[in-house]
Image (cartoon, rainbow, N blue to C red):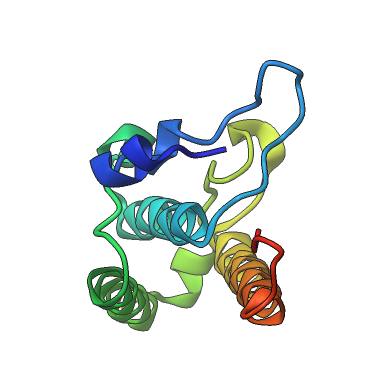
Length: 142
């Protein structure tokens, strides 16, 4: 699980790993929002034909409005990049998020981004519902 120091450093990419027992920790809203920012930034890099950012270069902006602003900016960058694509661009081979030899196209990447965003937002929503269910109770929220 992420510790407070990792959140304060805003370098969440390296902060979520397997614990010593080998189990996967429960992600936090902070980590999930960083995760969206990380993969979306790299997806935009691939669409734009730029070298992709390393995950250690992606920094979480912080609680609340800074993260909302960051994700909204990524959405604007994403839609602007998509607006520039041609049919030929969509047929171009890409190697993200799968291996280079997978034979998948930029159109596949666009579909994957949509699915990944839905999944991550649903995970955040679930954590918010758990928190709301525990509000005012003696049990800690996850």
